[in-house]
Image 1 (cartoon, rainbow, N blue to C red):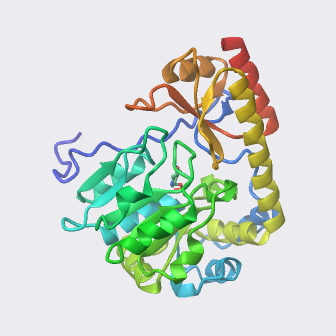
Image 2: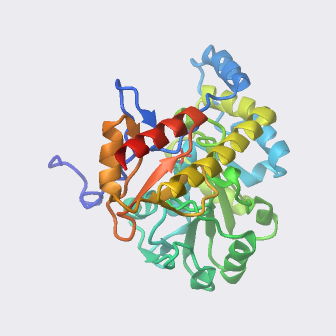
Length: 350
Ligand code: PMP
């Protein structure tokens, strides 16, 4: 730390992203990316947009918003595009939490939530997931705090039914409930339609997983126009051009190429089910997942040992040095070939 670093941030422990190795060719199953390239149409539109990079991007993302509104059935005042959904989540912590309105989320969930809270000087509480790693919606009823729920959750992959999300939203009418649906396209049920009914519900989604655009950084938030207005106040006070031209163009292509999107999601779901069966046969306990990853525990090796030994064999997975989940590894579901490589590496190890 330099002697100039603001005392406001000196206690901040930053989020640690999964490794992005350069050089060695790993079977990369550690950051929940898609194994498939972006839609060819998205790539073509992005290449065209590269020729206009001398100009700032449209701060209102009008072309992209128009396509998204059509696809998602929302009005243009009800959506905001961001630089990855991480940015939408950070904006939500800035906009909807303060000393009187702390943030609340599960003890085991996306590791960025406590970082965003601390970054923004917002108090937060965590509520333990149950023994089976499921969130009990009753813990959140009438809690009167700004609620953040990843659904499906990460790193567990477990999903909450929409009816339980609705109960939480309904019972906290004076607080915002943020539902982070980064993984919803792999078998979850989106709360997006409920945003019409509840003015305190904000749904965040990303193009990083099911639309193969992690490297482009594109996410969005959908909610009541007043909520979106607040997020815009934050956006225009930090970075009005938060979505670049190539990403915006690629986003349009990705949204329009529905077939490609659907086929890829289906492939991941089917690879996931096969992987779960293979892992179980090898003595793993695997949590029920509706995401593009599985959270699994070996009956022989700890999470750290698995992570290290798989890495030696050229397979990268994610391990969390955290209470309750030390024995687990999170394994991204990749292509058939990648999953076969994982399973054969495990067979050698175990
Ligand atoms: N939410 C959850 C639960 C995630 O796991 C991730 C991916 N790390 C994100 C949000 C953010 O993804 P992105 O910023 O790439 O949209």
